[in-house]
Length: 323
Image 1 (tube, rainbow, N blue to C red):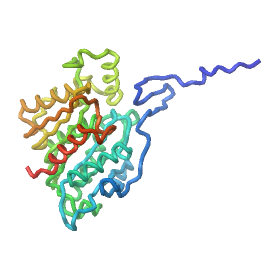
Image 2: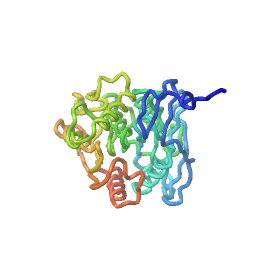
Image 3: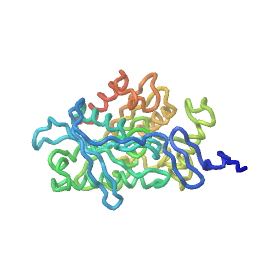
Image 4: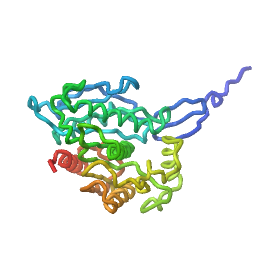
């Protein structure tokens, strides 16, 4: 009689980085979260209008644009380029949590936002997500003379006040976009500041609360980095540990906002980044905000809690300020 072994049919796991992603030995990639998407819309809560626009025909990549509906004809607004998080491997610019968050931020700050969708690891390892995000910034820069491909940006974007923002891995990318801008520049664009929310920075030697963490947790963060950047020199690579970057002071903006959360394992890396930047004289004005009692990217999952609303208002003030 034929006996079928169910276990034999299960694909073998090559790398399990739950709750984010599982890689199988047959090459299949299973993303465990961030797979849901929502369409652009006129959001009734924030009264913000959004639409999707292609920013790279070559790579077939789009971004989601956001515009407050109350903006007057010809009125110029700061532009916020938002880069989503998710360990470089999950989520998208079209995920419900990011769509909702950017809607709220645009309404509060009265800015135009460009939410960037970049190709994700492991199919597209770093530096591809960096390069995609840079191409999105170059696409925005193509509107500097008011004759770019997108009317919203031609009519309303103040390219003298561009802010790069992101959370977690997106915060890492935003930092590196500012570093690249400091070295390469883009004609007609001024990156006024960056907003890093719980940025994904790390290091070889544990610091602060990392010392008390389980080794498997620390190994998981390191493994996520090595998955994202197979060619990395390790966890002290300036791409993941910017405090080791001798060029850190050349950050191409005059204002930096760093948000950390008390219970976030990445908290001390965000604080170290801010302290190092101050010591080296990079970034100009540096603001730090810590959310007591909160964990990593809490604001995305509990956007109406006190600390999330307070952070939203602080970021809105930072990006809408004329200073």
